[in-house]
Structure formats: C-alpha cells, structure tokens
Length: 272
Image 1 (cartoon, rainbow, N blue to C red):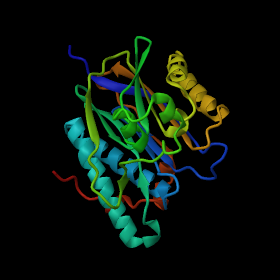
Image 2 (spheres, rainbow, N blue to C red):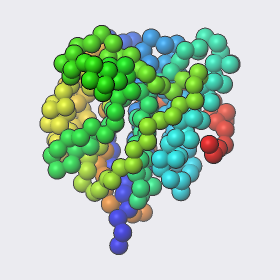
Image 3 (tube, helix red, strand yellow):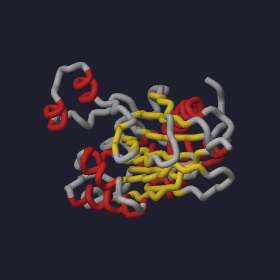
Image 4 (cartoon, helix red, strand yellow):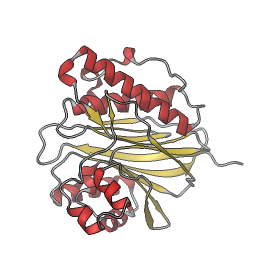
C-alpha cells in the first residue's frame, strides 16, 4: 500500500513580552502548515498576515487536488490581490505587508513556499536542516560573500526584508519541492524565535518526544532569551495516515478574522 502523508501538529503564537499586539498569524492542519509575520513597523501588519493566512488556508482546503507548489504560488498572488483591495478600501492600510512560510502536502507530493524571513526546518534522524532561505538584505550580502556569518548575525540590517506579500508588487514565492517521509518533524516559526535561538538550540528542543512539549519549550526559550517580537511556533510530525482527517488550528492575529478580512471577498482561484 502506498504512503499517504499527513501532519500531526501542535502550535502556539505568543504576543511576547515587549509588543502590545500580535502581528503574527498562522494555520496548522493535516495538510497545510503556514506562518505569516506582519512586517514590523508597517501599517496594519496584523491585517496583512491574517489575510494571507486566511487566503492560503482557504485555497488549500478548497482545492485538495491541486499540485502543492502551484497552489501555494497562486494563493500568494491571491493574497496580494486581497491586500490591494484592502488598501483601496482603507488608505490607512497603505504599506501593510507580511512574510509567508508554508508547507503543503497532497498526501504524495509536498512543497514549501517562502516569502520573507520566517523559517521552516526539518528534523530527520536527529539532524536539523533549514528548508527555507531568508529573503533579506543581509542574506543576499551573505550569499554574495560580502559579509561573514558573524557579521550577518550582528548586522543592524538583518531585518530588512527584500520580498514580502504586500499591496505593491505581485509576489513570486520561492517554491521548493520536499521529499518528506513518515518520521520527519517540521518546525515553522517567525523570526521572534530565530532571532534569539541558535540552530543547535532548536535541534535540541525540537527533538523532545512530545510535540506539545517541544512547542512550549521553544516558545518559552525564545521569550526567556529576550525576544522582542511576537513568537509563533508550529511543530508537526509527518505521518502515514490515509483517511484520517483532523481539524485545523488558526493562530495569532488570524484568530480574529472578522476584524481583518471579509471571507466573501476572496475571489475564485485563478491560473497564472
């Protein structure tokens, strides 16, 4: 019998100890995991993240037969269209933007979509691999060999995001096909985690047996390490579970969708 992949997950979003509101949003379900971080300092970042999370999760749930990479790319463009409509309706939202890191499986094929600097990691046989690639100014400088890893970690420009989902430009997410297998564990998180926790710390915490324990410990460790941002964590195990469906979980600003997005305004899925 062929393997049919699903996710078993635990997730949490915390406003943190410095911010007064949560601009992170997320969704975790048996086929989709996503984190969206409203870009700090931009107008209505929580609206951008919640809208994007809603559109991506709605598309994934409504079109289970679509190829995951293509569906995620189309959903990112649809989220952009919703932000354009939101700014037209309320000019005070001009400048709102969000990151997006999403993993989607159809049970056989799996894909990662990346816009911005939230991250996705894979823990397999005790070894941690970063799946996503930051779309930041500092990462571009690092890739070009213009700065060292140590300089990148200390750079005052490390939060300058080069790509985001906003109302200005149609996004082109980085799409990576994933060869997931039962027994893998995934971590999706906002930069409120990765700003303060090393890969070694994440590997250790993610390796805890219970998903709920791993999630709680990662959130707590980020806060205790002095994170000044919202902290959002999704821990998911990849399982072979044909025919078993679980409910999804909405996180952060996405919980109060009535205040940030009108579901009836989301348009039909379109081809490119």
